[in-house]
Amino acid sequence: MPFGTLPVLYVDGKPLGQSHAISRFLARQYGINGRCPWEEAQVNAIADQFKDYFNDIRTYNLVKMGFAQGDADKLYKETFLPNFKKNYAFFTSYLKASGAGFLIGDSLSWVDLLVAQHTSDLLPDSGSVFATSASIFDEFPELKAHQKKIHSIPNIKKWIETRPVTPL
Image (cartoon, rainbow, N blue to C red; front, side):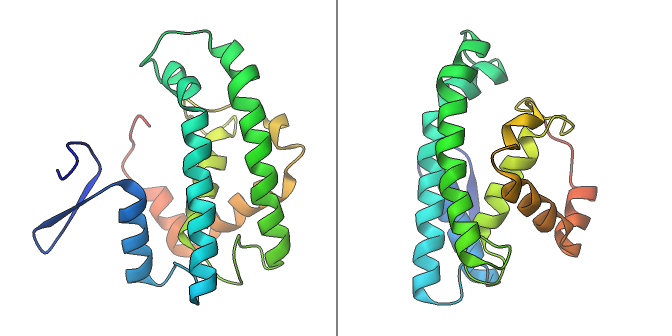
């Protein structure tokens, strides 16, 4: 474990740490990192913004998962919701600009998977510890539709239906 933490991906016996580095490596391997250098840069920008967003809501997430003490309702209102709205407005602008139902360009990228899974985890029927009210998507119907589109792609749909059940 190069940084002493998970996740770690081993490639030819060599460890690669950090979730976004792993995602970028696999995306390039499987052709979902953008179709040209500019799209790749935009994909990376969204991924980095998502990482900032997740860092901004970290305290709320830790309380929701039971790893920290705190007032989850207060953190939801004061931390999660403002950051969710700010970042989902950013993601919506990219989605609208692409005009193709993907965040960048006219094809699937790994940030589509990242944002769609997060959206799915927030839906009330997800069974996720992060599930919330469906009304938070009232301002972002495009991203709710995006999640359905991405999770309806045959290979992704098949994986979701057969993946192992995990607590997070």
